[in-house]
Length: 206
Image 1 (cartoon, rainbow, N blue to C red):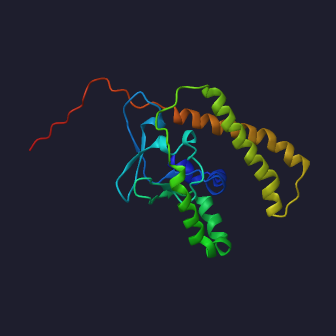
Image 2: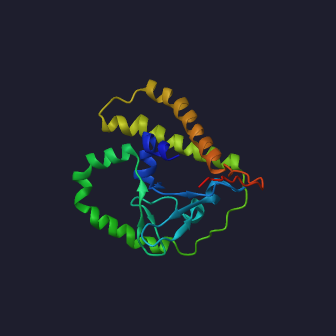
Image 3: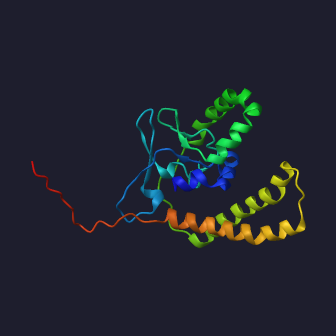
């Protein structure tokens, strides 16, 4: 998942525009019949608090707007995130534009975080229509990428927006979006290793 986040150029949209990120360090329970999100925990390197992965989720409206990192509501510090390579390149190239305001932008963002983490619901949600959820996620991701790649990017690069390009892009980003949604569904619902009640013990000679 981390490697996918680093090298996939399409995730620059998630990271820089939506503020959807992943932490640099994530702890995951290997065993248990729970989905990935329920087995994941995010440690704060500043105070040592261990946050449930569900704290940073769409359920709590905290999955997005994490441009600077994940907010620790225990010590009010920022938990570092893993950057996408394309995002790093874009940030580097546009630094002369936003670099002058980076400190004030970050402080304004930090000032708003405490209110976002009030009244959190850390109970894992009941099972819903997962097929509908991943289809919706994939459709909107594909639609966003279609608009960006077919219309916005050519405008930035001063290229012609042709009808052929628009038609070819429809099946490409429809399939790409559904593939992305299906991948997220499989990953987030992935169960841990089943504990069979047996423990493997190694004996060492001294």
